[in-house]
Image (cartoon, rainbow over all chains, first blue to last red; front, side):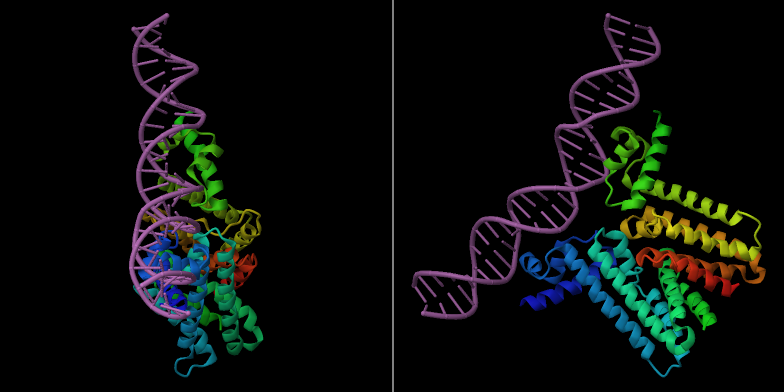
Length: 181
Length: 181
DNA sequence: TACTGTAGAGAACGTTCGTTCTCCACGGAA
DNA sequence: TTCCGTGGAGAACGAACGTTCTCTACAGTA
């Protein structure tokens, strides 16, 4: 196994373990074991655990937004329908067995690292940009403001679903979003 | 110093330190030191750190909701004005020097403890009940649903303000809430 | 075959931290 | 005064864990 594949396997293991059980709760040795990679290799791929966590979050950011975008792009939707599809996708996510809240908010609360906080902010910024883009098409004159409001609803729904174990939060957020449009 | 006062001082120190710097980042010995209480006493007041954290969150829950309610009760407001006052209070909170996001969401992400998760859920339930009550007076026919929607906005605003350092989130949430009313 | 560099396994190290234990001082009761 | 219980200070313990080090095996090369 070369360094590149080791890095990929480490990231895959980290993404699963960190999201499922939390970052502090998962030792670096467990990630190493799950990936089937030696400790030496791990430290060749990532300088430290903090590094691995930042990489994990960046990878998750990409996957998360890609999946969201894929769902929004499904079928033939109106601009308004594309905005609302965001909340349908959230509903599916919340209902899944493996939903454990927002990986980024969790990581932000868990780690005391400015590097991690930076990645978290980047993720939220990217989501905001995407929501503004969707909003721009649905309501050209107030796309920016609408996008900002949608982000509130998305984050609110994720938190409520995560903390209170209430998957219906997505449905309610969708109703509010529909009212905004 | 008797046990009761020691407990109060420990709670006060814990509330400040845990919220400011995070739970994991603050050792039990630092809380002890800040409170001016011996380690023996601390373990007489609280069986473990987890116990102390749960007590801290319960204390914060009461203070937080009391301050919110006090602000809502200020002056002579219409039922609608009382709902919107919630977001004014959030705006003040976000703008403060000592704002570090939602203590409960942070704790939820940080601790892997069902006891803590329970307290967090209780807090959110209490906030939800309060919002429903406010909504009930502003729009009797749909108080329950409106309360649920307000919670999304409140939590969304807290997260956005905390992660993206954007105190204006409260203003935007207020606009959405005004539209709902 | 002899040599060299790299990889894997895991022992070892150092630190942090929650929790418990020890020792000593002191205050009140007999 | 003597005894006893309680409290304070902090040493000690044990576990967890991130990181580094050591030792051995082996693949490639001359």
